[in-house]
Image 1 (spheres, helix red, strand yellow):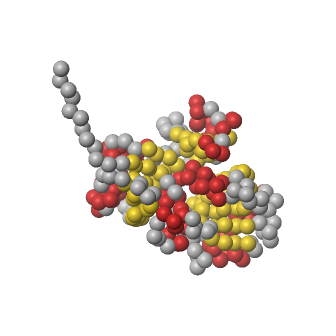
Image 2 (cartoon, helix red, strand yellow):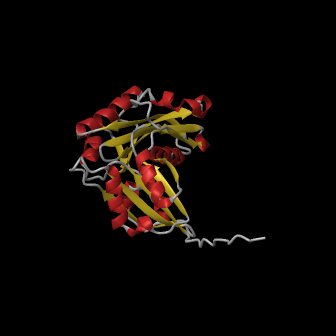
Image 3 (spheres, helix red, strand yellow):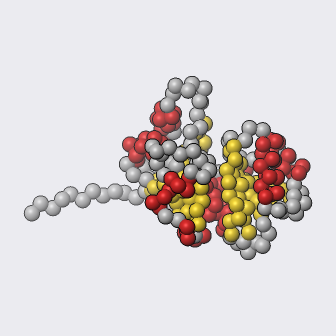
Amino acid sequence: MVIPETIQIEKTNNRLAIQVSLSGLSYCCFNTLNNTVSSFNTVVFDLSNPEIKIEAHYAAAFETYPELTAQYDEIQVVHSNSLTTLVPASLFDENYLASYMQYNTKVFESDFFSYDAITEYQINLVYIPYVNINNFLIDKYGSFDYKHANSVLVGRLLGESKNSEHKTMYVHFDQKHFEIAVIQNEKLLLFNSFEYKTVEDFIYYILFTAEQLSLNPEHFPLTLLGDISTESDFYKIAYKYIRNVSLLDVEDLRWNNYFSEAENRKNYILFNS
């Protein structure tokens, strides 16, 4: 009887989270022994030449940043786009993912659909992942888990709202799009993604959303996070039209890293992945 050789895989006690999009990627390394973020980085692609395929940009990043090719015990990929919709668990059937998406996104027969279960809040987020990026990463890593950035965002913001009876509007700001979530004591009242080009686009969608939910700009709290600061023109225009504007308090998140408030606010999704 031949006893097969046992392959010993040494644990690294490190985990990689990589947030992917068509314009770039961000990644952070976690030390799993104390659940701290040891390092992070953001890579913005030069998209001036449309003939360069997205896979080539990712290949270049993997050649440039050694953290992406190191050994990890676990790899979490987070897809970042606005191709999502939320479905209550009571109305959800995984056989009809395309049907849920067609109400707010143009879908094609060739599209691949996936979903994340936000189990604690009985919500499912249906989305279209980047299949070409997943395929590239399979060649690099062999296997990994993946989910959508909005699943992380919604789950964490619902937790932030615990025991708060105020209807709070959260806005997560990113390049070219932002997400609005209106939450009251762990209940999601609204969630949507909006593309923007100007500060006027930004404030229009915020005020329009407030009007639809009968939120008075003199009273409701607006909490901003993501790639935004008090010096941003987007923050300033929000402050002009809404009385109670603030940046998300990220002190609890900073317990697991040594980075600044601004870095934690900008990388809120990545650091919570």
